[in-house]
Length: 611
Picture 1 (tube, helix red, strand yellow):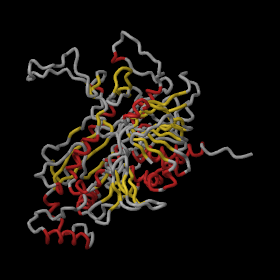
Picture 2 (cartoon, helix red, strand yellow):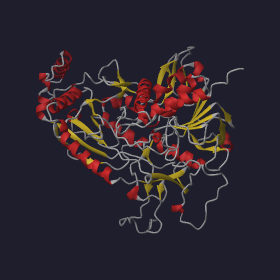
Picture 3 (tube, one colour):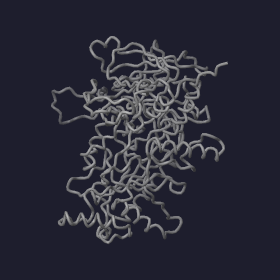
């Protein structure tokens, strides 16, 4: 069951989870499946739904009082659905760009005192000494050390409501973290976790195997590079994606958090164990004491309903008491909640100091927010070569009758179309995996991001997107800190980034750009306006390391089971736990950590054997 703004005082449960993205959802699913009561708080709303059949007792058609969503007999609403599954975006992917833009909130926006010379002279203006700080702007943020495009999505499902669904495994040589010091044991552990994570999120590598565009790009590249010398070799493979092909083979259903949460809403028995509070902010978890370095535990989570009904306003802040607390609300917000938890409620910040210099001391949880990593990113778009397009009717890779049928059917129904590719032919989804020789992750496809939309007068069947994602080495100096006196738009301590790439990081980024240009020009020419470019730092949205987990307590926040050091009942989840630099998409790896952690919690919550 889930509530928008219930009338309640303090609550009790076995497990409290802050955050409803795929990681929080994985914790919830595994713990509820094991028979434990879970309360989950989500700072945003449930704004995307799908309907699924009930598992147990059927019910008549009805509606949800909270959301006024009508559903069919024996159907229930499950939140956290991928918004790209809506038919309007299946038909026109470029329109989805604006959905992504609307879902993202930039984390740290520096203030600006630029003079607006053309403003009405009588209007109120900012000044050099006092620039405007409203709308979440951050006076403490140095623009030269910012991750200027780092953003978050608030709402049930988090970024999986608009993500690209790419779920690669991290490379063993550089990217993959260490769970065990024995390399063979470590790889075995990761392989087992990856297998389970792929089942949970529904990873596939075959959903685009009958796409003309996909095969045109994939097989052309494989043919181009097969005879290259070893130092020039590239491995081109289908990109692993969390999706499945629908009965209409031109469409896929993109997987998101609803897939993980499904049985917690459709199974009547599990529903009784699960409560989802939307528009509820987890402000902090409350430790028993504030003595750094000593064993501690969490006594309660402080939660605030952000949209209370009139009768609830005096009771909008309350406590949830549990045996186990899990904070999994994104790389930034997870560290933000924990940083706020380091501040006693009666704390008074020192006076007569520059407020920009006042940051929260996280001495209860050393290394919180340090060693952060993000991904330098290059991007371009290419219009496919005319010879390549003209070869399509010849079935150049001899892929069988399905290819010929698609081409002939399209020509028969659209004789005036100069492009021999069906209008609804699925897009290419190709990758070059991260490797020691080429330490970057590659996606060659046609998808929607917060950038790279194509003008309406360009036929998108001819366009291929190139995205190269690099990695940076974790460095202690790279960090996100939280201000004592400045708040973000949700009333939490304002995050401030201090991030700088090393000399090696910058060199790899240039090599990565050169590689992208070389590959892209093999099959087409640059789309005007989308020539090769480095993207704003943070735009990959793969921030990690904020609550890093690992074997070395001196450089991490949590152990390899994601339990925060010195706090036996506090766990963290999300991309922030990954301690290594990486170029590939991190969600699958974060799911692995959640699986490992949830199994540990389930073992911990087992009742003591009777004497």
